[in-house]
Image (spheres, rainbow, N blue to C red):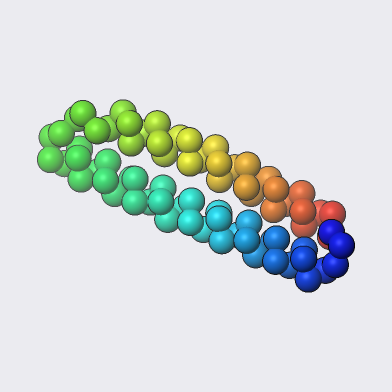
Length: 72
């Protein structure tokens, strides 16, 4: 990082992306529970795949946050 201010901005942006990914993942869980309770089994597999992809993205972003925090 060139300046601490740039580091703070990057750190904040990463945390916002993590928060957004968690919110979308909660929305996917809600949608899958509604489909399950309505006995509609077709959307469950795509919702689970999307949730797993978001989980991977979230793990990657959290790893970046921890690595960035360790460097600072």
